[in-house]
Length: 143
Picture 1 (cartoon, rainbow, N blue to C red):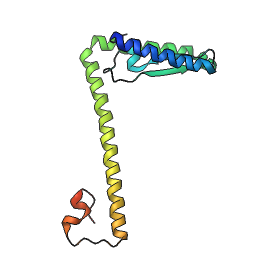
Picture 2: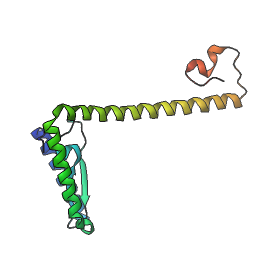
Picture 3: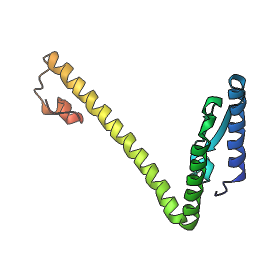
Picture 4: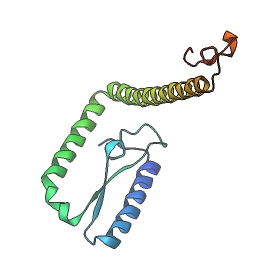
């Protein structure tokens, strides 16, 4: 496991402990584990989230699954240590993919908004005598 800055590691552990205390109020044997980039030390920075897994009493039979997850985390950490530039590039790629999904979502919303506007204008009989006044001139679909 890579070692994150001490202040982040301490913050993550405090979050985990608080969540575990809250879960134990309802399920006495509940446990909470940190996983993902915070668990492996591959976080991007202080703004990274902390992934938590709540393990409930009835689900504790999944010890083998947790062992496999721990082994996979260890392999990921070892690969990151052996190839730090690859780990950095992987993190940058994940960030770029998230940003691309956000831009695509925004674009879809803008297209839907333009389509609603064009439909409303067509309903109102709003023909455009001047091309500069058309929705297409303002980034919308042509009439």
